[in-house]
Image (cartoon, rainbow, N blue to C red):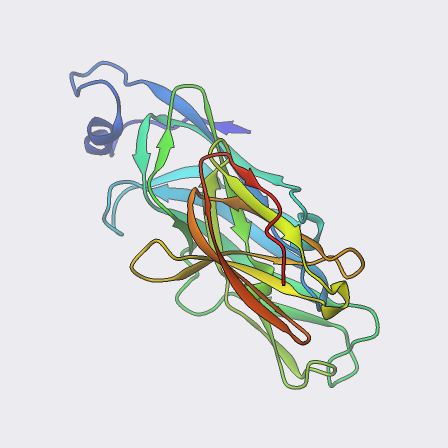
Length: 271
């Protein structure tokens, strides 16, 4: 659903990001569509999150004006959004230009453990609240400004379940679950991927793509290797250089990989 927004209250932002000069004429606009994705989890059967709104923050200041992408509440099972599957979060028409900040307002979450595993109280589900201080929205990490152009720009948000939900206590019989959301996003037209095979497949390996090109290392994406074939894919990566690390039973290793805009790099195999 598209949302059309009045310019009143953020003319200064329009002047800063629009292609046209601030002469009183209507600036050029483009449509920003936001989609949601995830990677599999080794311990969760489902991870449902309730998202009540998505918004941008104009300018570079945290107190800048909000630009609503959607304020229609919806629920998403992140475990249904794996292996490249995405779901629509919202769309809005915006002045063309660069945007650097986005927030997802997540009201709550509910997780279900995989069959055969229960919490210490015998149940297999937990209802979770958003951590204190994030009720106004969870920050979506960008690798750089998102450029909204004339036409449609698709932004894919990766809600990293593997790093957002952490069980407490013994893995086979946890006593609880912590919820610390981690979100990254990249424009779909430049998103890259890295794929390969982990041997042996029985190592049940997890792969991490860590951005090694910046001043502070940042894990941008995670993936699980298929337990039968050993194949894996790290998707929706911003172009750049990554330390791709593998961690599994009796197996560790790291390879430095560079991907360009829209590049799908294959054959990054371990060991």
